Amino acid sequence: MQIYLPIAEISLNALTLFGIGGLVGILSGMFGVGGGFLITPLLFFIGVPPGVAVATGANQVVASSISGVLAHLRRRTVDLPMGLVLLAGGVVGSGAGIYVFNLLRARGQVDLLVQLSYVVFLGVIGTLMFQESLRALLRARRAGPRRPVKRHQHLWVHRWPLKAKFRTSGLYISVLPPVGVGAIVGFLAAIMGVGGGFIMVPAMIYLLGMPTKVVVGTSLFQIIFVTAFTTVMHATTNHSVDLVLAMLLIAGGVIGAQVGTQIGLRLKAEQLRILLALLVIAVAVKIALDLLLEPAELYSLAPPVAP
Amino acid sequence: MRRLAALLALCAGLWFAPVVAAEQVVAGLSRSDVAITARFEGSDILVFGAVRREVPIPEGAPLEVIVTVQGPSEPVVVRRKSRLFGIWVNTDAVTIDRAPTFYAVASTAPLADILAPDEDARWRISVPRAVLSFTEERGGDGPRGAFTEALLRIRTAQGSYQALPGTAGMEQQTLFRADIGLPANLTEGSYRTRIFLTRDGRVVDRFETPITVRKVGLERWLFNLSRRQPLAYGLLAIALAAAAGWAAATGFRLWSR
Image (cartoon, rainbow over all chains, first blue to last red; front, top):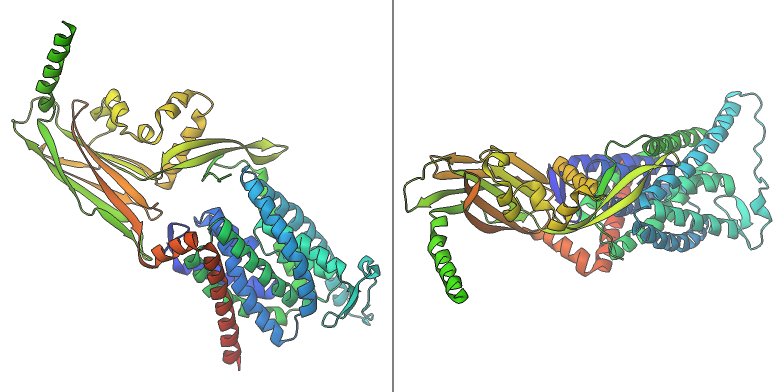
């Protein structure tokens, strides 16, 4: 069934869009990533203009994140205070990111920046995560008398001032590192046109020392606001949110998020991390190949950007 | 004396003018407006008509017909990637001030056989002539040439520019028809439709009429809202997303009980 999208100005199959939304929703519920990294290239691939794909993808992520967070809230796996602190940093970073995005778009270098940041961040994060979770998985396999898990690891972030208790995460740390992490992720997210879950989830696990189970729900919680903010910014500055497209993606996305949450709860923390790491690496490799291999068409067309 | 010569020339011009239109186009379109609705999948336009004559069919080459449909023009930036430090990057860009978003030309035979180059230059009928302005054409061999060629190549591959030789039909040098398929990714606006009759490569007569393409209903409403009330539109998008997310979560909770 073909549906005409009024902002994208193209006619696409409604079932395809529903399927894309569903797939991305499952990942979102499982890993606490918004899925923007996947939805943007997929939409671009089926013919949606890149600007519309980025902005509408953000809108879809709002819906699947809300769906996922509500499922996690019921299981008490969302650290609300931590989410709010991360968010405070995220809003600042996101505003700065959109400013830089528009600046670069006018110079035609946005694609490059987006792709380079994808490759660098996803590559590094994916590899580190993979190593860590593989080690953890092997340690768990070796069975034997299980060593007591060190509950309070003293990472560098634990010496900073302005300490606060984050009960759900079992942390007593300064609020400055979460604010900083939120700001950096918000900035990158706005430039890369994604919610930033990909960077946020590993940062929460490894930089802030949060338990993996809490990370997914908390990440989704703050992604709701970052992507909602991004959606409004894109709608007001670029007029590139397509509501018809968004509704079709959302219909699949919210259902997928519920399914993903169920799958995630049945997996061990190490398994969850290793799958996420593999996914991150796969995306990084794919984009790296796009940059390294000679494209079939060297030229591309784009509407001019008003100065 | 000079004034008299000018007067004579004028009279001669008036005298010869009607001769040019000895064969005239009478044409119609299957539809003169295209409404883009939610279920829009493109639209086929049938251009049909007849040739009216006051005199018998002239001797010589048969009458040929060319039908063109041209969408609204918009500026476009053409970028070129090249290898920089081992990766492929957009390095050069050229802005083309006006290029039609859609152009199709259907004819009874290849344009090279039925249209003289100077007539093509005058009426801008073939795809490159119609798409590129005079200045772009002149820069065709210069550094911009590769970019304008890329524009033609990419839009042709997308189906936005179509050269359709041999698809128009002409019966007994009198009745003609041509089908033009408008794709689903149409830009709103007035689509200029032209019909040319040619004989021996010369344009004998021509006819021009617009096709109006516009969004209607929900598509129209959403498009207008996104432009006129962008903030309200953005908030609406978020409200709908939130409602959908909540509905799914609630639905699953009730279902899994």
